[in-house]
Length: 220
Image 1 (cartoon, rainbow, N blue to C red):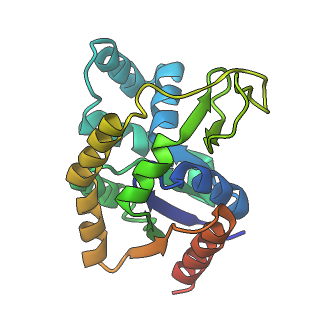
Image 2 (image 1 turned 90 degrees about the vertical axis):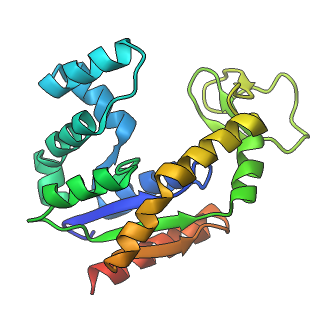
């Protein structure tokens, strides 16, 4: 365990970031905090910011930086994040959000910002082959030899090809990432806080690389 580890994990969708964040949170005994988790919790608990976010989402609009920054600050002020640290997954997404996060964490600075680097063509290949259980959300990779119908090993639900995992849809999401989020790599790199970890390997090998990167940053 590394008390007080405060991490940001960046990376394209399909890089395996979410799964690795869960593993890291268990390994370092810190909460895994994702944008979706924060939004759902704030809405469920009917905090003032959660009610504001709910109104925006009900109107079919995207939640703005001001609301998201406020929700993040609320979450990071909770006891578990203050005493044990956290892994931020999906925030910040833009440089203005990163600037706001620096202000929030001024007295408890980030331990490390890690970019899990997987080439775009490999991400496209992975996401095109991704299949998801309709009932429990477990992810699988299609290899072409699966029995049909494909039944989930976890819950027995139907394993499906997501409608938004077409090459065109995936490329649109990757374009949006490169437009909005890749500038974060430069932002954190300029201040010497960025560590790039090669994400092209088996999940276990990538996990070892990530933990080594965190430990090295912690010992600086």
